[in-house]
Amino acid sequence: MDPVKITLVIVITIAIFTNTTSLYFLCKKRKSNYVILCINLTFADILQSIAGYIPDLFLDTNLQKATTFCKLTAFFVAFPSFATIAMHAGIALSRMVLLSSCFSSNLINYKKLFIKIGISSWIYGLFWATLPLLGFSSYTLEGTRSRCSMNFSPKTIIEKAYLILIFTFGFCIPVTIIITSCLFTAHVIVTKYNYFYVTYGKENAETKLFKEKEKNAISSFILMVLSFIVCWTPYATIGCLTAFTSVKTPNWLLEVAALFAKLSALVNPIIYYWKDGIFKKRTVREKTFTKSLLIIKSEINRSIDHTA
Image (cartoon, rainbow, N blue to C red; front, side):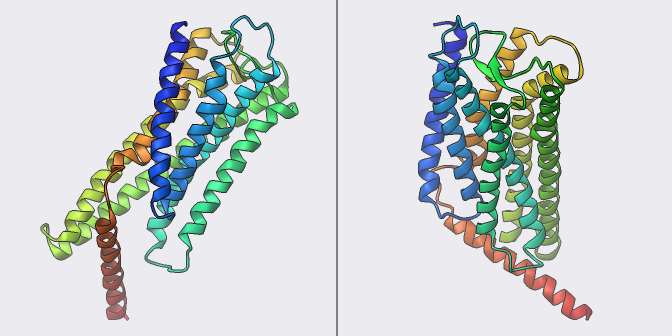
């Protein structure tokens, strides 16, 4: 077995193990808030690994043209990938919505919100992954002759337009949403920490809690942004070069892009669940956090009444 397939076997094995384990423990948790999105994200990685990556191991390396089986593997790589990208943006955006509205409205059903984000992400992924099957671009054999993927050597205006749209809606817009939302989340948490620090002092339980939340927000921000950019920039670079220039994509860049995209299935469990401690019981912390939110709301209402 060549080094590329050996690497693929390692990535597939680790991805399936970590995501399956994460999915098991996620399903045992209370189905609300970000757990819903994390379950969808984990399932997308499992689907991608099983239906997209594993069949790659059995493709004939001497293929002369894309077979139906090869195109299907490309579809099941693209479909969960686009859905995952949408969920990345959805998770970042939902954090901003949650933090910006929790004090001004109690009417938002967050569980329904996250369910809608999950469903919308799957529809989003299915839409972009199905277009090549309908004639808008195509799934074709890569220059490496080892797998199929989107057509990164477009010849028609429609094929180039598809790559431009993918570059815009599959990379640029999600990156912008993720960075903006994560920065806003970090800003809100820092503001809350400063509020507790000034009002209750450094040793107050709520102050310490938000200090910890501040550290977690910053680390999550760095991990989320860096992992997304590292995993998807190679493919975005290929799409940009082929859509706007006449540069032919070298085979080594295709190999690197494929490897980094596959690595996204490994980092998602680390960022969204394993990082928080998969075996930790967080009931006490959640109750403390809820109590602190109520304290803030009470203080704000008191200030408003006093002003009035």
